Image (spheres, rainbow over the protein chains, first blue to last red):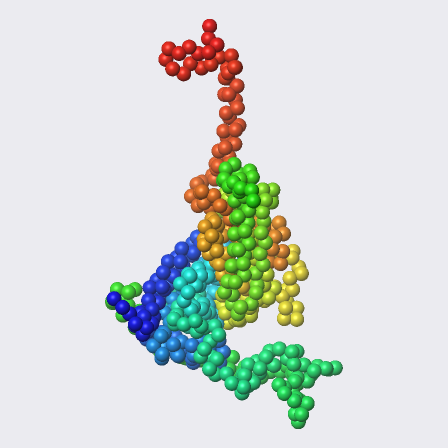
Length: 291
Length: 260
């Protein structure tokens, strides 16, 4: 039997699913400190990635990391080489270990559990409060998923961003935290040295996007001599020729505040429709014996 | 180059020390793996310390036994003591700690620590000045670990510990993660900048010292078994004859040497 280049590429793409299942072996074999934490897994492929891709794109309008991940996923999907996504989830909100270690802020696990039950809530990417030993064990299992993927020499990346999309869309039930491991596409780089991101770069994009982030976040790097609270900030070339200098000034920004304040509302408005689609996927998987 | 003779038995004899030194190399490689583990934002936040030597491991085991009682947690008293034995049976211990979980949270508003859309759960329970967590008052901590901690940082510590464990697995040295060992090591001053430390005892022995542990392991284990032979056998031995004066008859009809 002989497989040519195109067929080999196609088959190696299909084999990502096998690799995902082997990674699940490593996840479930990962050593634990508590010995109690149940790590739940789900594997998502093909069209059933679309609700996640759309959520990444829509929330990504306001959050850069999600934007970049959404772009990487969308392009891989449209090129016919979507990654296989392994989702890992666990309920970290109940402490069963009885260590009374105090890392959660309570003197005993019992007090933590009582507080956790009464104050169960959600942050931007996770439900909480969480037992810190559970959190450690979840980290170990997540790391083993990455380590297993690296042994297969497959492009991979573990993402909080995709985990939070999985959590919002309930790809796995009854978990408080979720993380996503992208497996493939079969390329040297997709999530590091991002090729899709690199395509966006030209002199203007570098200047208006990347260097502007640097100037905003690290103005001291660009600061000229100052004797007062508003140091002048250099532009990228010939700042001395500008009619008006830039200065650092910390002030309320109603526009950005509105975006930040509206982020959760925005997520909540776009999640229900996508979540209904995910429920359909889950129901179909159950009917077909995949769940 | 001289031969290198390696033998597990007896413990801490030169042939055993040769293999313990290999475990030490493994510990160093494990720490390298821990440092390359994926972490949130790619931000460095772990430190490591390696403890090696019979006296040093004994000190660590004794600290664990002390904590078994002084922390007053009856539910874990046995586990502390069993795991102290495992430390004695180890070649080396690698400590990995996170030095950001208390003082410099990730400030992501993720909700892991307190289930809220901000980091208030941690900041409200800490002294704060100028938007920074003030860690100078260490008397506030009455528990083994000084919480609350940033869940993102603790998760990152899990990744680092995971990579160290993966390296151990790859090198075929036995290793497991223990919070008891980590707490005791921290109390002894290892990983001095860290608020939460995990202990990773490492052993190169025919039997993995960290599994198949029975109840009352703190009083019934290999070291105690051997000592029980040492403490008992000496006594009946004294009922023996003077071997120089009388040879024991081995076969039927054979005269024992020195018989009348």
